[in-house]
Image 1 (cartoon, rainbow, N blue to C red):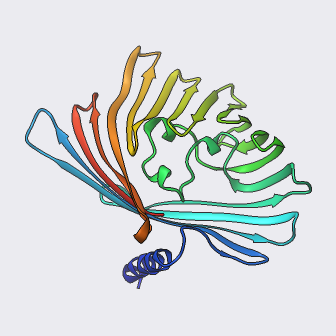
Image 2 (cartoon, rainbow, N blue to C red):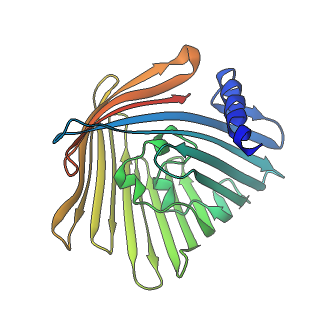
Length: 283
């Protein structure tokens, strides 16, 4: 039965989303199914020192929803599963209770995105399935709690206290217009900071940890539908570049059939490989 469950689930989600919208799928007075996600990513790697090729294919589906007990008390949850050719099946999930006594103030508790995690794409979005190396250095959700205060439509402050296994950590996030700055400090003194800047033509994610790792990824829209990217990591202790990829993407959108995605061509300067990529997701 298990062998037939996943194909049946994939078929159900595909047919459901193609005939509906990707977001705001179903909403009533209490229950909201705000997002159904499905994406297919195919990557082919060509080493420059031999006539060979390697392939990686993965498929991800996900759902995001909420249950509104009152205007002030809301349960929120999402879950996603990714099936890959070269890796074990991966699962991502979150479940939280949100208390919102006023329009500006909210309190969250559960297995949730930390104030630092929110700089990383949510796993039920297409950006997460093809996230950069720099984005992947940001931690996933953790058990804990956070409070948020909204000063205006483009300014917010969030503080959280989360469990990192052996240690607890204080998290802080400051959001002002297109800027997000966040970070945490563990009880043992280790720390991590992240910055995200996003505008229509330019996007940057930069992270730095007390382990002396600096990572950054940059997307620049060079023309309509075309984007240049650079994704790198520098190790200060070793005084070397540990990761470096540059490439270009051609984004595609087929609104009539609710599909989006891109063709990508990237060069990995450390592994000396040319990487061809096709990514398609429901939108």
